[in-house]
Image (cartoon, rainbow, N blue to C red; front, side):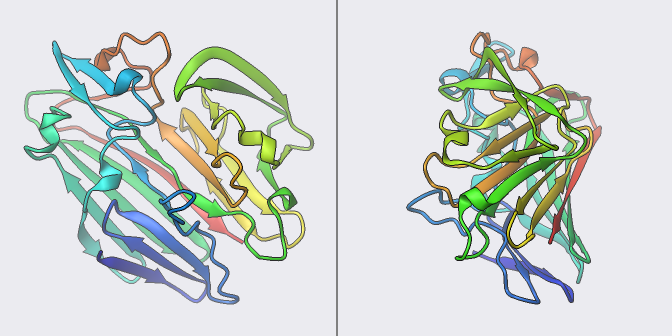
Amino acid sequence: MPQFELKNNLLQVKINSFGAELCSVKSKENQLEYIWQADKTIWARYAPNLFPIVGKLKEGKYFYQGSEYQLPQHGFARDHEFTCVKQSHHQLVFELKSNSEFKKVYPFDFIFQIEYTLNDNVLDIAYHVSNSSSSEELLFSVGAHPAFNCPLSSTESFDDYELIFTDKNELVINALSDGLISSHTKQITLHENKLALSKDLFMNDALVFTNHQIDEVSLFSKKSKHGVKLTSVNWPYYGIWSKKDSEQFVCLEPWYGIADYENTNSDLSQKNGIIVLSPKQDFTCKFDITFF
């Protein structure tokens, strides 16, 4: 698959055109690889982009204007080739457009662009969604799912890392039930804004946060002080996930959208977190990742 590169004196960044997926961020100084390398025996993705839904649909289906459609978890964008429409030494822009095949499962006109910009040790990522219809609304969700190596070096372990939540003393987690959002919640108390990683943390799937709880979270080693900080101000939902028993990576996931709730009626227009875009209108959201 075609691969594109951004680099400066600090970082070397690689992005696959397939899924417009970030697949490598390496330190120029020590060749430290920050991005999980999609080991197929564990989890075969790097940092998928989620569109036009985030999470799982109840029974894998939804209804819109009386018709039934099916979509896989997190939508289809992550499994299709994007076109690189802009390239410079510090920026890449990838694009995916609606077509007749997509309309069999998603009956909307859209242009979805993902913009990567490298500045020093920070990678800025922006999602641009345009409603290309002149008469119909566009209903969608969008989100990020980057996986970071954890531990970053062979001399460390998963337990040597912690999550640091800026300006937070406690958080509320929404429980998942077979990938759907349940009515059960759990409050967790942080110690000096920190949550230690452990094998047990992801025993019941992802940690899901609603109600704009997280603007910034860092994943850092307590030993080496290497890590990442992901800043996503005003994103309404968030997921933090690692595959059960893997202890090799952690995903930090800002979302504009969320999986179906258990009690959903599967009507897309009534889906929690769905964004409605008028004809010829645009939507943009941004986040950035700082590498240490």
